[in-house]
Structures are given as C-alpha cells and as structure tokens.
Length: 137
Image (cartoon, rainbow, N blue to C red):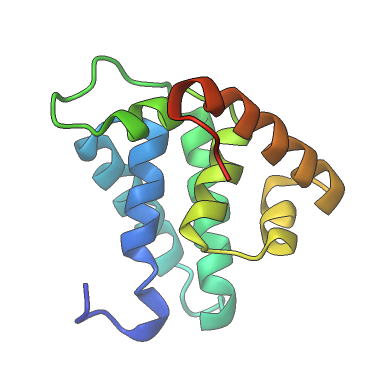
C-alpha cells in the first residue's frame, strides 16, 4: 500500500476495520472496494482532507447494514472474532480508537454521538470485552 498517494494510505486501516465488521477477509475487501469506488466517484467534490472521514463514515454505514457473517475462516485471530461479535456502535468505536484512525471528537461525530456518550460507549464495550480478552485499556 506504500505506492498509494498519501491521502489514501489509510486504506490498510480501513481494511482491518472492515475485517472486524464483516468477519471475512473477502467481505472486508468487497466492502472497502465498494466504499472506495463511491468516494472516488466524488473525488472532484470532496477535498483530500475530508476524504478519510467521509470514507470511514460511509464504511460504518455500509457495515452497519451488513449482516454479521458466520462461520469464520479458520485463520481468523480470536481477537478479531471477539471484536466482530460486539454490538454496534461499540464495536466500531473501540476498533477505530485502537487503530488510532480518528481523535475521539472526530469519532464521536462519525458515530453520531457526543464525546461524553462516546466515552460511556467505549467504557461499556471494554467491560463487555474483559471476560474474553482480560482487562482492556
């Protein structure tokens, strides 16, 4: 992915996020490709600065409408399975915070939450993960 222009280098993180959301590498690739095509079609009206936020907002909406897939491929790490089984929007909030794609304020805007609601959501999602992964920070 290093051959991508700088403003598109977030696509690796987008694929990881899509993989957590869909649970399948193939579905993640399809979801990122579909989202990328929709953003690329609007490249003339979307500034490079807004592209990443618009991309992840669209990916979040598309993935929220995407049914959770089962069964998993055998080589899927247990942590990805655990994250995949979380409820939305907690799953997206925690995944995107861990990937450090956005600041908490930007993420709250994408998820349609206030920063206080986001903090509560992250705290409850971490509590939900703790039995599976140990203490989550």
